[in-house]
Length: 192
Image (cartoon, rainbow, N blue to C red):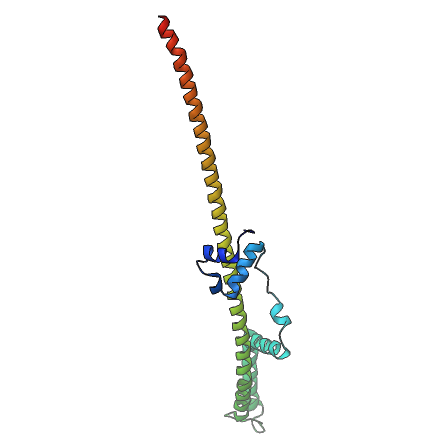
């Protein structure tokens, strides 16, 4: 593949003009020419470049979407209602219909919802990046498979050509043997 140009490979394997290639297709073709891998492990690279706010948003989304948070919040709500309805019957700081609790829940929802949306947006961006990377890896795999097919076809063709030459040599040798046998057989007939 070293001797081929980007334009030739684009035309041959992607059926496109080199000028019409996307950046990722160019990277993949260049990696095929250079015989380098395009795959990599993204792992923790997302968290390393994240701002503090982004990491907090991810933590809030991770905690807020867990069963531990849901169960602990249910316990908090039950404790709040029991405390204000049963324990502090006469001096409850938030008697039924729990207006202060509703205010706290509304404020929590108002803060938590956009923070979770920020985390979802970051996750969507990570997913788009992963999908683009998967496309590049798959494209590179297809190109490598096509290159292997070409090599196998060339190898098969050269083997067939070699076999044709061998068959031709054998046929010539057989013809020579036939001629020798025919030449030997003639004098014996003439002697009789």
